[in-house]
Image 1 (cartoon, rainbow, N blue to C red):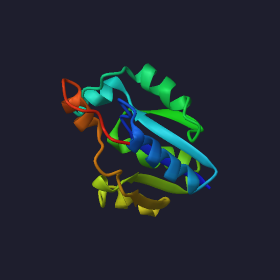
Image 2: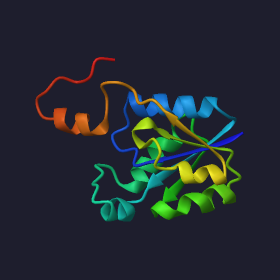
Image 3: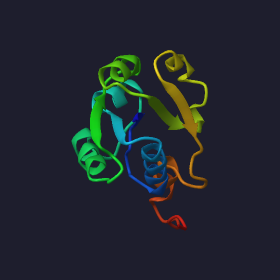
Length: 133
């Protein structure tokens, strides 16, 4: 089974790794779409690392088989068809937002890792304690 997920994947942390591990466990091939720098600008989101650096990091994670650029919100249907995806996976903070993809593959929302997020890391980066693992 082929699985796909999407995200910015900036400041990789344990929550990202848990999501990728659980997604990969659902099949035998995990494709990860990462938001390009241009797409992040359109979303009014700023990543610390460039697309190329985030791509390099993701390609180095053992659960990830293939990394593609995410250029638009609308490309997901085309990606699912192009890469013969069986299951679309996202964190449950997106619950319901991608249900329209059920016409093309299964859609699964996985629980987020409690107490950890890229936003919190950015807030804590200046003088506060790191996460407890």
